[in-house]
Every structure is written in C-alpha cells, then in structure tokens.
Length: 409
Image (cartoon, rainbow, N blue to C red):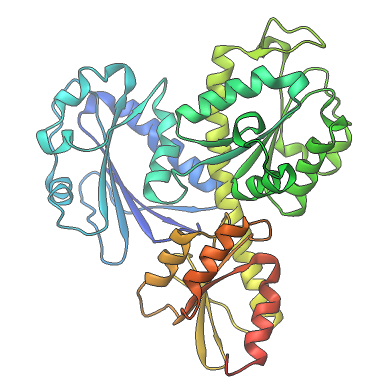
C-alpha cells in the first residue's frame, strides 16, 4: 500500500491518495501504475510525496480530500480493510473509494468484490493499467471528468477522420464541438464558433494540406492563440511543416501522422484512421486535454498574481492552490482561477467555500469575452448584490486597480 500527498498543482482542494491492491499476484501492474502516476503528476508540474510504506496506514485528514484506489485482479476476493470500510460507511465527509480492474474481466470481476465494494463505480482499463493514471487524477479532482474539446478541420479533406474522433471521444463522455453537428440552422456561425472555442479546454487541429486556405480554419487558430487556449495539432501526410499556421503554433504541440496510420490513404482523397491508431490517439488526446487544463489553471493563477503585484498588493496563497487572496483597503479578497468561462458551478464553489484563509469578497477569474449573452445575463443576475462575482481574465488588472482606488466599493 502506498500513500501519496500531491503538491504544486492548482487543485480546488488539497488531496491525498492511497493506492492498494487486493493480492500480491498483481504487484507488477501495481508498481507500473504508481510509477506512471508519479510521472504524470510531475509532467503537470506537481510534486509527489510518499506518505506511507507497506507497514503503515494513511487515513483521511480534516480539510483534505482523500481518494482510496483499490487495484483488483478480479480473481481473488477483494475485502476492504479498516480504512476502506470506514470510507464506505461514510465516516469521512470528503473521501471516496475507487476500485479498478481490467475490462476483459468485467463479467467476472465485480463478483469478487465484497458487497459494499461492489456498489461502488468501478474503473476499467482496456489494454494496460497505465491508462488508469488519468482516471485517478480526474477522480481526485486534480483534473476533471468534464472533458471538452473543439475539433478544427477542413471538411473537404478530413470529414471522415473528424467524424471518427467525434464518435470515439463522445463515447468517452467528452463534450465535442464539430461544426456539422454542433451548430443549429439560423445561428450566428461566427459568434457560436468563438463561444464554443472559448468554452472548450482544448482545440484539436487536423492539419491537412489545404487547411490554411480556409478562412474559418485560420480564424480558429488565430483566436486560440490570441486567447491562450490549448492547441494540439495532428499534421497529416502532405501538410507542410512550413505552413503559415505554425507562426501561431509551437512545434511541441504537433504530432506527425504517417500514411501507415490511415486506411487506404491516397493523396487528395478523404480517409480514416486505422482502428489501432484511433485508440492510441484517443488515449493521447485525453492525457493532453487533462494536462492542458492544469496548465491553463496555472496560467490564470500567474495572471492573478501579476495583477495583484502590478497594483503593489501582496498575494496570499491558499494551501491548496485553489485561490489567491489579498488585503485591499482593509478588506480580504479571494480570487479563484477558472480554466474555462465561469458558470454557476464555479460561482457556487467559490461562494460557499469556508475557511479561515478565505476572504469575504470572492472573484472567479476566467475568459468571459465571448460568453453567450443569455448565459452572461443569468450570471449577472446571480451575482447582483452578492459577495461573489466574476471577471474576464483580461480585465482583472483594471478591476484590481478600481477596487484599490475606490475604498468604499
């Protein structure tokens, strides 16, 4: 059994993770999972601190969330230990159990779980236990299960491939924007396009030879760079690495696709991905999406720090990294970064959060410039007269300066 304390990540609540297995027969897979999880946390800029060893226990602590991961072989009986049973009995407010096993054992696996464990949602890996690293971080609240992606592509060249990715990602509960299915007749195409771009966590760009000759495709790339959205490029055969889109895109965000990855590829004709390549890409996209969310949170945190320091104010960092506070004219304000346009959930989380380190005035900070008008009206109605509000990240410096200069506001 291993206990881990995660740090250095802009999580909503501090989190500890305990990882256990039901039998020594899966020790090798268990070790691979732990090593892969550590690697992923560090890739996202976090720290990894081992809290326990095989001869001691880790239990949920006050004011910290706790995820109890139980790796099962689906052969030997899985009986909860004392800590797991206490969580199942709801003795802890913010602790969860996550059993996991191989998907090919789904028919026999759950029967090996003791009754109270069998009632939990079980996570399954398809091919390899390393797939579970992103599941663990999402369930722990480091990343998110609410995954959203925008597919930017040229219909005349990559429609079948875009449809493949749309179907595969949708089956995994991604919210996927594809212009052929996501915009209703009569809607303002440009406004809807930019609203959806802002609302997504990541843009997947299918770079085909004629991509940059499309006005809308280039608008999407320029918009993404202007508003610092995550971009991942799949460069397809025939597309030039010297294309004009690369003045906006770093080489580190490009994956080169080969003809062997595609079904019956012929230049100038539409094509699909090989099934095996589609599976690999979906795993890669999921990992890239989650890492992009963490990076964007950190980016907005940095902008909050900069806005406060520009007004000669001192940032005060919460233990979890979820918010940054500052004393402005004798009143404590807390600023909450939101990687996507703020919604009711973000306002609720900020407004109901309790703790000695949080200010009475709370501001959710995100990209709101292209927010749908009806959504903005709803949020404005919610925050009217309330101590919690929201602000566009690009207007934050002006807001901080205004608060500082207007002592009675």
